[in-house]
Every structure is written in C-alpha cells, then in structure tokens.
Image 1 (cartoon, helix red, strand yellow):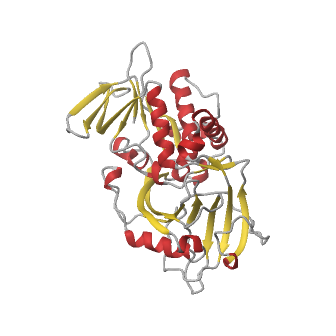
Image 2 (tube, rainbow, N blue to C red; image 1 turned 180 degrees about the vertical axis):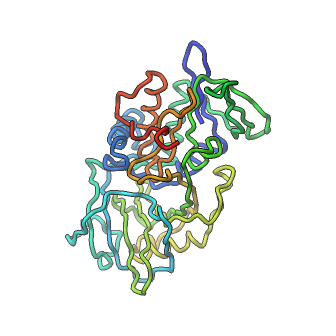
Image 3 (cartoon, helix red, strand yellow; image 1 turned 30 degrees about the vertical axis):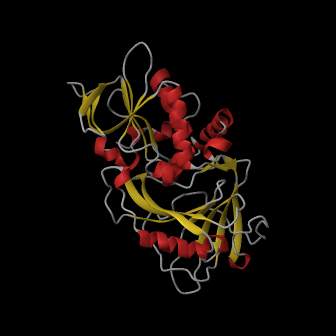
Length: 371
C-alpha cells in the first residue's frame, strides 16, 4: 500500500506486511510481453521493462533477457494424476493460437523431442522477455529508496476516512517487529494489495486463487524458452496445464494449475505449501524433460494471485480512482502482474500527480466501472 503524505515535496511510503516480493510478485514465472493482457497496458509496460533493464543493469541484477515463448502440446511418458476443472486454471492467459506441426527449434534441446506433438510460437525476442521476479522486485525497491521512497514493514489495520466519508485521511498499521499501532497521514492512498485487496476495499470484485510452483536446477544450463504446454498423458486423464520457464541463473521454473482449497492467509509469509502438489508438478514436467527429471528440486512454493470477478481476463486489472477522493486502486493483475508492473506504476503516478494519463489509455481499467 502506497501513501503520499502532504508537504512541499512528494514522498512515497510503501507499507509492506511481510517482505518485498513475498507473494506472487516474487514467486511467479516472470514472463513479460507486448502481447500480454491487457493490450492497453502491456506494450507500455514492456517498453518500460526494457528501459529499466538498460538503466539499472537488469541483465545482471534481475536476470532480464529476451526469450522465445510457445504453446506446446506434448505426450508425457509417466504423468501423474493432476487435473483441474477450476476456472482460471492456467497461470497465464494468452491469445489462442492455432496449433502448428512445424518442427520445433533445435535449440529447445531440454524437452524430449519424441514427446512434442505441436509447437506454436507465441512470442519471440523482439516482443517477449523475462525477469526473475524476486530479484526484480527487490532491485526496483532499492532503486526507489535511492530516489527517496520510504519502505515500512507493517500490517495495515484500517484506512481512515474524512468525517464526511468522501475522502481519505490516514492509514493505521501495526509494525511487524513490535506490533505498535501507528498512523500516517496522507494526501493520496494507493491500494496495491493484490489478493488482499478486499481486506481494505470489501466491495472490490477481486478474488484469489492459489498456485504452486517448483524451481529445478538441471545438471547443465538450458536454452532461453518459456513454454505454455498441454500435456497429454498416455493414460485416460484430463489435460494438465503447467508452465515451464528456463531462467538465466541456470534453473528451470514450473508452476501448476490453480486451486481454491485453502483460504487466503493474513500475510504472504503464512501461505500454506502443499508439497504433494509440488511433487506432482515435478512428475508431470519430468515426463517431457530429462533436464528436469535429472535435476535437483531446490524450491517448492505457493502463492495467491488476484483476478477480477465479473469480466473477461483479457480486459485486465483495476487501475485508477475509486469512488472516494484520493483513494486509488491498482490490483487484480491476475497472471500478468510482473509484466504490467512498470506500466501500472507510471500510469498511477500520472493520475495522481497530473490528474490524467498520457502514456496510455486505460479508461477500460477504471475501478469505478466495476464498483
């Protein structure tokens, strides 16, 4: 949650309940693309990602690099019993592609060739890239501190409104270490709480779903590809929708389908990890990749991602003013949060400081259209 206390200079205060990048912001795959959802925001954000990487040595600091991205159909050898009928089952939504039976790139040598039944390119290095989300969020936070932003660890307890209820006054929070109750006055408040948005804005149509993921260290580095595969087991089962990312640090990241079995905890550091689900992700991806099968699983994790209820996913998040003066919302980014983070930040700054956006038309993302 960001605040702007009123004085002669603009001061940004970020209130973080647990840690920077502790949720989906640090545990997602990290693909960024001009063709991401929504198209009113993605191209701007992609350009800003490239500019940030150039300015702050993103290649070294947070693993920024351009990549290929593809839909892949594959026939697994020994796939587990994972299946889902939940909506929002895939971590990333993306344009529907027409399957292509063309030969897949020879550089994609860490997927077993005999398992591939189709390969359809979604993105190329001209319009697709990736970052390591945890490193990206921490690096950008440090850059913001150097520019004067304040970061405070504390759990927000309430947004305090003016007496007439038409505007905001302050935010109350408990410090993480001492649990002291504090209050900070502000001219503007931005709720960027992801799946925790409804805690502060109960009327906001934002829900959450849990996703598990694993990180595997293969025996040798693999080529730069992001894959959205459908695995077709050789036994009668439903399709299994993992996602697979090679990373510049030599690891392979993979996330599995969504579930809504465990309620949202109080903070990101309290998220429950079902290790059996992580094991199934490993089994499923191992069925098409010897690099994963022979590698070492170094991380098993879970996070919650927010999505907007009541409209198509490709319309995008809720970004802009609420019905309360100086109370802003930037949430519901679904699976494209990291991709659209820089654009969201820039546009929010334009709205708050200039009263309008000039970098992109995001009128379709106005929260007042939904509540």
